[in-house]
Length: 497
Image 1 (cartoon, rainbow, N blue to C red):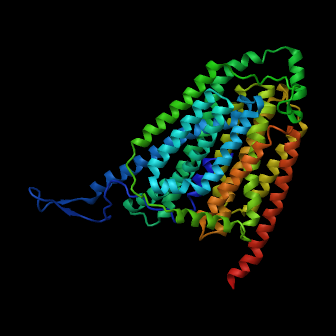
Image 2: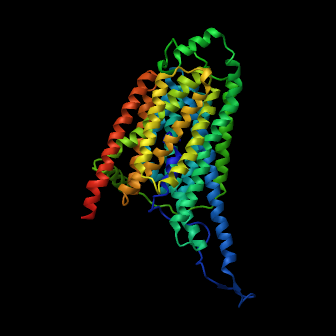
Image 3: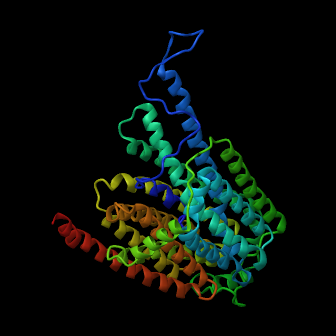
């Protein structure tokens, strides 16, 4: 996820206030209207409540269809991202695939995705984006540089469209539902809808990891019975001293059989196909607009100008770190610790812990933020990340300490929830009049951080990458302290003047 994943964009919906309204293929009718029937029922009045029931059902149908479909799509995306470094480790193909995907995401988020959504409308744009997910899954069934690299680039394009299209789908729908039921606070209704959708989509990480483990763990049970000699070698080369592509790495991270790979990819492909069918069952949207080259140019210029703003500069390191840090868990931990010592089948089981703590913590932090200042949460996340990285540096993975394989991802899940919620909070506070540009900037820097981290993954040992990540964490912490001081003193005083 987080990886910078869909969970972040679901939260973005809480703060997006200028989202275009969706006009559904059902007439909007005033709350207290009444109607007179033509002959032969002339003179009879229809109760407006009867008509509202059908309208509400259509809105709820569209909401749950798109949320369930999005969850089905995110399941294979998150699972394959966590498995890449182990599943396609030869020659660094897996980490190169993830790096290419997020580089494509950064570029397309700036130049292509918003225009595609505006031109096609949310439904058609999401259908095209999710179709690209299918190509990526098929490429993973037949992995090579010639199949995965082009597919990962298209996957980055599809995911950028997905991240733009989904938030602009749910929020207007929730506000229309508030209008139909007579709710005087449409933003509160949007928050409720977004909370439900966030919980459903975020749970996709848990289900995806359980599915991959159920399929791959069967084969790994045989690998756990390897000779004592190989176990000793594995323990010497696993952990912080693990170096990708080193001839000394004799580990338990053997690639699963082609049969199991085909079963896993077939399952994921089926999930996306079901999501496409659910999407087709939704009502059509009509908020398509014509986009000119000048519109695209103006938007790019606005985003680039924001990067030089004094208010944006301290945020850049925070956004970059939020993406950069994910490589250490989804890439290095899965490959050098879990796959190396236990086997690929255990990757999903350990990542389930991160999904559970991430889902629960995100909800709790969202509630507690009303009474606790965000600096407390950021400090907590920084301490948790630092503790996990120091543990990875000092710990030699062993089956005798199996609990640590699950504890470290759980700690990362808590920290991930903080970075997800606080990034959105900071953007909403600092850029209340430029939310769309602020979120695009956040998405781009998250993607650059993720792409950069995975790009160096195949060339550096885990110990070196852990030290680099700690350095980036410290720099982002200093940047955050400067940002809070500016917000508390300088900018607040200027605003009062």
